[in-house]
Image (spheres, helix red, strand yellow):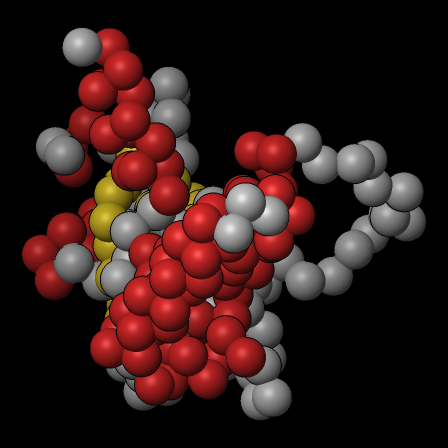
Length: 208
């Protein structure tokens, strides 16, 4: 990125929309000046400009809730940034996963999800669990126990899939396959790999 191409406003700032790279949930809206953007690119973690304190602040420097940058994009007018991150904790100072947790409008009845939306929603939920680690959550426990425990669980679920297939039990095969897919998504989330990356590999192979 050529920082000089960014159109900063009259105060030398540009809005930065921060998005979880795994779940694609919007986490917060902050501002960067040229120095903050350059520092972000240098260290690979988000650095913003505080309009109230009139100084740079490295997100998570004191709380530990840092945001590892995976990509930074700018819009067609070059006056707004989309910063995709892997968060290591809540984005909001109130302890919420996202700063956008309040709803201004009444929630309408949600339409039935299609198969792809279901995977997106599950990936979003897992990313939130990974970030907030709520007590009593099965996924939180696996995230805390680490990659070895998650990998072992995938091995167990794969074995159950094989058994269901050998037993010629369609219902059981569907259930065990769902368990396997769930734990695979959990592993990808733990390793910071978006499911989109897997789809892209399949698309490339299909094109061949």
